[in-house]
Length: 388
Image (cartoon, one colour):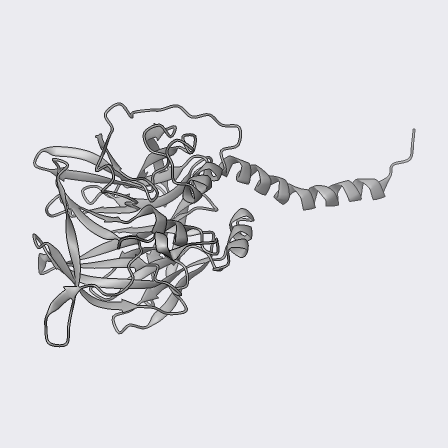
């Protein structure tokens, strides 16, 4: 019998220790890009496209729980390519029009809400700043819910910002209050309004340069953060070291954050200093969450997820349904469990890419006996509605 070789055994064990996390990360990365997976449509027969050519790039949708009206942040697809893929070669002349905000009723009718600003003498004129809309949120005045504050993530040239407007229910315009920017708000993706001035915002990644962003994303590095702005206008880091935080939402005292590079939804509690304390999370093995919509009636979360991130990335560079049919979307409904800070997961819809290349938000609209789901997409020239 050959002598037992301790050195080889120790070397094999050491190699296993080194390779194990790398193999696990590689497996997760392959699942994230949808490698080797084929998806088929599920529960899409009641869905249809609306607003062709007008409702372009509607990345985020919020439904007023008091009126059932839906508000959509939309914009031309060429402009969106700039902040979706920063660092790439870009021709500013392609931005032919300003992004827009729409209000939609349950019968598919919709109209644009003008964005205005007030001059020193009190005259209202069109909003004069650059406007490249991403995620947004609404704060309703507790004393009068018809008075609303809109907060938009605004990817202005040279820096990112949050632009805040006031709006009265039923008006055809909203008025600019302020646009805020800070070094801490370096890569905002989505926002959670806490009052007329205070908010949380997710920074999805640390770097602006395309190559560093790509490396950080592909290596699933925890370079993201959540920042908080208080009532006096001061900013602080509420949460650091999270992998590509994207959508953010709230139900009662709990705050939810979607992580793309660690595909999951995290549950947080806000501390007295407004920092966020992790309570739990639910992991998605083969879906990458984007925006989150919380149903105000029951607290259920609608998470819109990507199925094939590589194909989604292609879509962001070349927004064409014909070239991106295999990207795909899954919409999940999450119900908070009573026995633990985690969720029960229900798959509501799977679209292989035939209905829309990939979706970024699914919001529930209830109005005048109609109940449906509105689905938006950052790089589509329409939105989708599905029966619930």
